[in-house]
Image 1 (spheres, rainbow, N blue to C red):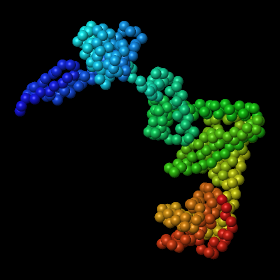
Image 2: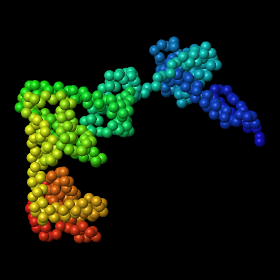
Image 3: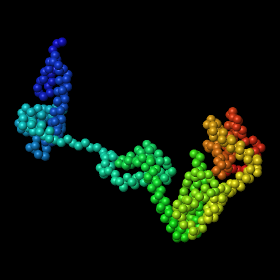
Image 4: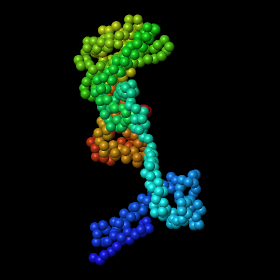
Length: 425
């Protein structure tokens, strides 16, 4: 290849590089351009430090006239006058390279001063917005008392809202605590189950003991207990005891004293022993106040409270429900109607397709977009709610059954004739 040369006029000197060398002409030009930009930046720093920035129309006069080398009133806008030698220098496009080159070639001492000022100029601090974490760190680590208060607050939330202990391991809850208090570390769930919540329970019991004892000492006309038993989904039996009374100031108070796991069989003897132990744990002085106890009509629990020095009362709502149940058993037509209604509602509760078709029928007939209600044995008014909802949606139910292939039967006209009363929720 023939010899080719790259010429660059960056500082009034010509640099020539042979194309046959290891360094390409393009690289030399790129390096020269970088060096030119670097000198421009250095000169701008110097001018901003010693003589203000260069603007079209000449250089503005600084506060101290002796602290710079350029100034005066040039004849053309893009030019500057050297105060040392009086030379007029052109500054095309307001560039400062000619000024730097003039100092380097004519006034070496001022050029060295320029380099010195550039090296000594401190770098500006980067401005950044403080985050919540920075503000928290600036205040220092979280104190032990603050950590304890936060832990107790979480334990109180778990107890009040009946949350499982695993709640503290939920990622959403941990993210919330981390955002509100980055310095706080949530304890393990076993810390809550074995230490924090048991201690919170003991302190709450002590406080209620003092309050109940104080109210009894001041004088109560009577005190009432309610007790009931239930079975969980895990087929575990529990017994509860609540306390109710009215103070001399007519303030009604109610407390749940216990909800205990009853491992033994639900006999009258075991129930009576459990209730006696609960009252003993609360250190209740019941010798000076009449004590009533309200229970359901179960034979075992009625026999248990008869062995105690309490005045037994049966729940009025439960007693009325037993009367209604006996009346239905004596009326076969009503029993048959309720049985068919229960099966009809159960069909829609166990079939997503049937429920969808029923909703379509409701929409076409412009009926309210509501669902059927299933009755529950332990909810005494649920049977009435089930029949009332069937009467309200009887046209849509009849249309869905008539247009679908289902084995469930609709209410026949004859039993329905006995159900012409207006069922209202």
